[in-house]
Length: 135
Image (cartoon, rainbow, N blue to C red; front, side, top):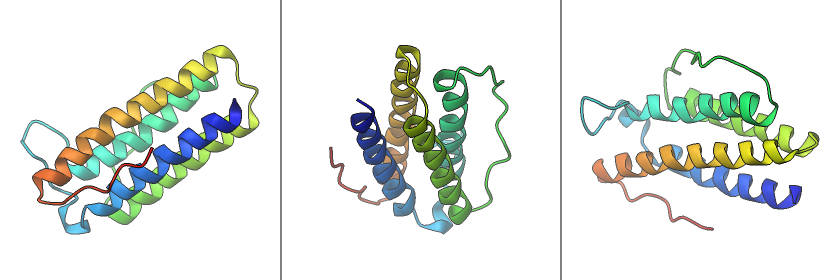
């Protein structure tokens, strides 16, 4: 089962990073409307969310929701995403996964998918064809 979880995580990582890379650096401030995060903030939220869900839902720690400062640019945002995915992969790979941890893993992926879908919409609103999703 662990191999399947890691493969699913790698697929999520690859597609999320392709979406993050598809937006030009100068467009990381884009937001489709004033009431939502800009693209940079959205990428940061995905990365922070991965870390928060990992701690609370997979490791079973009680960590408050206290987002870090939003990264300044595309390069930093992509690095933060990579760091978050690396940590989650290492946790899944090394930890004995209880039923609750597996449920937390799936909830984490669901959160990533939800916000990555928003990011794809941001790309389309910017006139950018998003990367092809590969399952």
